[in-house]
Image (cartoon, rainbow, N blue to C red; front, side, top):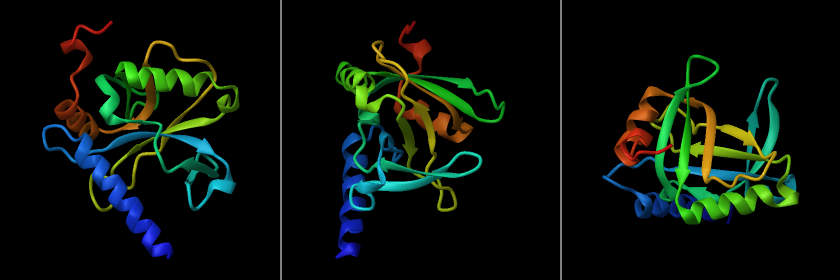
Length: 167
């Protein structure tokens, strides 16, 4: 029965990838809200993050997917090695982000980004932000963890902020 659950999850993520895909790319970017251990393994994924590594749990169902992204704006992260990105969300995505960040029960929780692996050896990116305030502008910022390859794939999929006259 447990194998059937994982097949369902893979089919669900695969269908979401095909349905939200643009220009034939298979990258799927999603954002997942932190949850408790009680939701694992049925409704949550266990992830070790940070230095030293700590155990976190994130909902399997994303709160926001790449289908909600209107444009992106990359920047060099503080580590000087990877990139961060600001993602402007559609009105629907902005409403979701506002609801998630304004809910008192989510204050202090993490919102993790997940990118489908780019090759068999790499795992999904696990960068996160801590929810510490309400976000009203519809811009979701991931501060680090993206590579040149991610940015090239994002450029194929989303308009760059400079091309849409973003502020």
